[in-house]
Image (cartoon, rainbow, N blue to C red):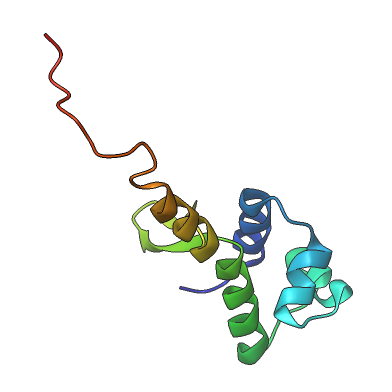
Length: 100
């Protein structure tokens, strides 16, 4: 899937991060990211790859394109998944849960 300015903008909104946070994680200048998102300049393949990895780090998953076009969704990151797994069994041994 091609990383477009609108996908990057939507990914930031979904992850609730600003350009500074995404640029720092991707190793890009904020102005470079802003110019890409605003459609004023393009990024080379290496920068796009770093940008995609940074977006995925913040918990956004790219969905394969369909007839409706490409998509995004928010997923749990590794830290959140670990926390969820730690909650299993917090209430003790499960009992019978049939409601009379």
